Image 1: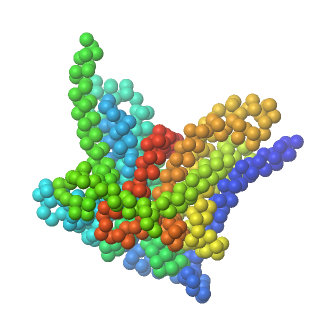
Image 2: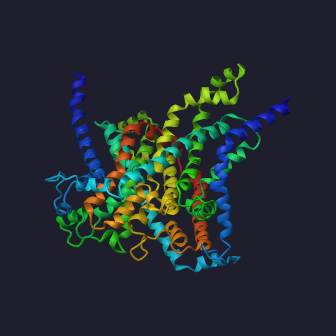
Image 3: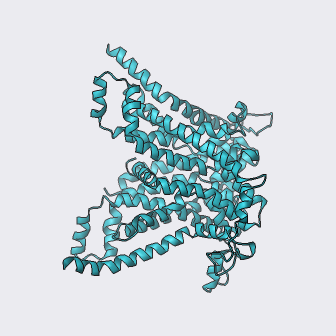
Length: 293
Length: 281
C-alpha cells in the first residue's frame, strides 16, 4: 500500500515537473554539456574538419591579450553596480519619508528599468553625441569648453556606458530598498533622534547597517546580471571605439558569430561562467561575515 | 491646535523634499522626453540649444515614415507580439505546473531536481548561444520564430518565483479537498491556480517585458528582415538612416511605447513581484 502510494506520488511529481524539465534539458542542460565539449575542439562553423585539440583553447585564452582587455573592461562596466546601489538607497530613503506624490515619483524612477532594451540605448547614443548632443551642449553652456567625446573616444566610452547602466539599474535597487525599509522599526529611529543623533548619523550608523542583507543581495544579483549583458553595448558601440567597450560577454558573441570560431567562443564563455561562480561563492562566504542581521 | 502646529511645521519641508525629488525624477525621464520631442521636430531643430522641449511646428512625418513603406514597424510589431504573447502564456502555465510539483507533491529526488534547476540559473546565456545555434541549425528552426518561441516557453525564474508563492499557501486549504477525494490535478486547476492569480499576473507581465525587450536572442537566431522583432527592426532602421535623427527617435518611441503602456497598467504587479522574489528569495 505505502509502496504503491509512493510510486504514485513519484509518477505525479514527474508528470507535473516533466514538461518544464523537458525544456530545461533541451535548452539548458544539453547545450551546456555540448558547449563544454566544444571547448576541447577547434570547431569552426561550416568547416568540415573538426579535431580534438585538448587544452589548446584554454592555453590560447590565457595568452590572449584581448581576453585580458575584455576582462578589464568587464570590471569597469561592473563599477556601475555599486554606484547604482548607493544612489538607489538614497532615493529610497528620501521616498520613504513623508512626501507628496510618492507613487508617481516611485513610478518615474522605476521607468528606465521596465523600458530597458536597445530602444533607450539608441536615445542615449544621440544624447551623448560629442559635438551636437544635448549633454555636451549643457556642459558647454556651464563653461566646460572641452567636454568628453563620450561614446566616440576610447577614454570616455566606458564611462558613458556606465552612466546608461546606472540610470537603468537605479530604479530597481530603489524599489527593493523601499521594501527593505518597511522592516526598519520607526521606534528605533525615533529613539535615536531623541538621543540627539543627526540625520546623517542615523543614515550611516543605523539604517545602512540594518539594510545590509538587501545591499548584499542587490550587489550579487546586480553583478551577475551585468556580467551576462552585452545587448546595449552591441547596440551602441559594437565594442568600440578600439575595443574600449568590448566586455567578456560581447567577446564571446564576437568570436562565435563574427568569426564563427565556435570552439574558442565556448572556451571564453566558460571563463564567464567561472566569474559568475566566484561571485556566487563570495555570496556564500560573505553572507556570514559582512552582513549584520 | 496641535494639528495646525504640525501642519505648519511639516508641510513646507515635505513640499521642499517633494520638489527636489520631482526635479531629479524629471532628470531620470529626460531621455524619454527628449525622444518624444525630437521625433516631432524637423532635422534643423534636432540639436538646437537650449533645447526647445515643445517643438515650434510639431510634425508627424517621421512617425508616418516609421509606420509605412516596405519596412513598416507593423511587421516587427506583429513578430514581437506573436513571440512575446505565446512565450508569456506558455512560460506562465508551464512554470505554474512545475512549481506545483516542486511545492506540493512529495516524491523521491525532488530536492535534487530543484537544486539542478537553481544551478542552471548560474549558467550565462553566452555559454548556451553557440550550442543552441548549432542545435537549431540542425533541427531546421534556425532563422525561424520557433528558435525564439520554443526556448521562451521555459523560465527557471518563473518556476522559482511561483514555487515560493505556492509554498506560502496554507496546507489546510488543500487538505479538505484531499479528504473529499480530489486529486492533484483537480486541486491544481480548481484551488491553487485561482488563488495564485496575482502571482501569475506578475510573472506574465515580467516575462512579457523580457520577451518584448529581448535583443540578444533575436540577434543570434534571426537573419531574415521579415522575421525581425522590434529591437532588431529598430537597429536596422538606425543602420539604414544614420543621419535621420528624427526618424530614429520616432522609431525608438515605437519600440518603447508598448512597455510604458504595460508598465502603467501593471505597475502594482511588477513592483510587488520583483520585491517578493528578491526579498524572500
